[in-house]
Length: 101
Image 1 (cartoon, helix red, strand yellow):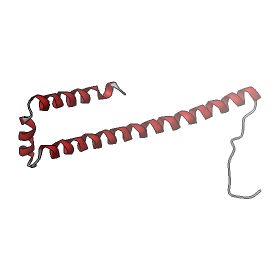
Image 2 (spheres, rainbow, N blue to C red):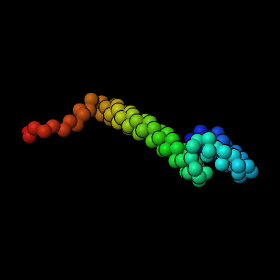
Image 3 (cartoon, rainbow, N blue to C red):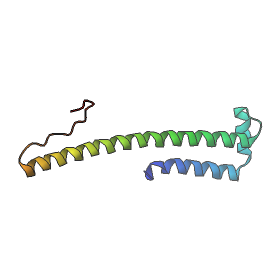
């Protein structure tokens, strides 16, 4: 996953370097967007970047949870097959019911 964000960090680094070398660019960009203070633009862009990063990581976490669930189900099925093979008879799955015996 580290390589996935390399391009984003490169763009952020180059942008920060350009603003450090040419501070007037931030003032011009602030006026072009319609803001008064350059720091407002910095905070706004930072907020957008963090929101995008949070959304991306949340999406990837959802995918990882789905893969984990699928792998757990696969391991359970494989264990069931192994138990059936070792015992020589099918293993009945444990079913919980609301009815009292």
